[in-house]
Image 1 (spheres, helix red, strand yellow):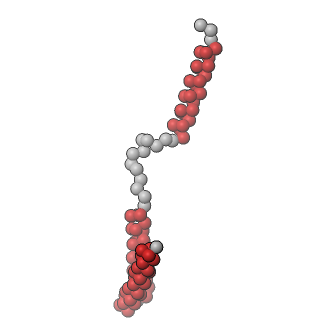
Image 2: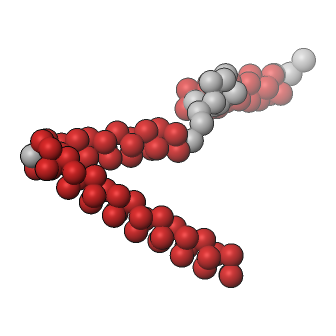
Image 3: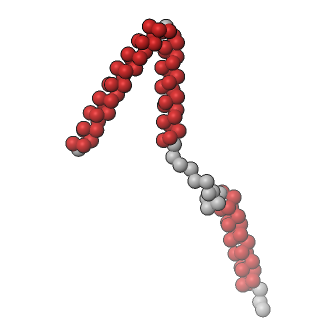
Length: 96
């Protein structure tokens, strides 16, 4: 529990530092280029960063899909079992 608390406090400190750096960077860009361009720069930067992190966090997909069963495979197995049962039932009824 102690490690979790220290990790949470560390994450809070990192977020606070990121907030101050963002504010100072925004103020610097606003002094140089104006509020709208600096807002666009920071907004697009965080948008691209967030999208990049989401792409990295996406779960891996397996390329080999040959082992996955589809509903058509299940239906084929069901029909095959039904026809096999019918033919065995007919064979059992017929006298030799």
